[in-house]
Image 1: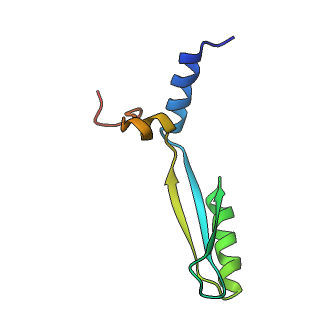
Image 2: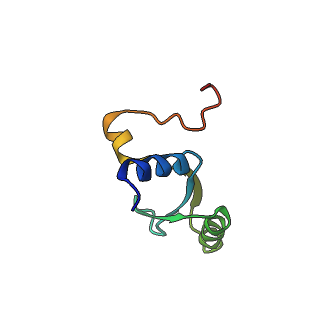
Length: 86
């Protein structure tokens, strides 16, 4: 069994370069409602946005980083993979 602190360390290292892509499609009624979907590939997000545009809807693709929740809550920053770090 892997110790919990080692799992946390490995997870943080893997998340340092991880991204998700969000497709955001606005409603057809002009209401300030829209649908967001998380994709693990850029191609899938682009296809979703293009299909929405083909239907005459506004759509965009947003690249997002992934950070552990405790970093967000505590304001701590992970510096794994930081080129300025020695």
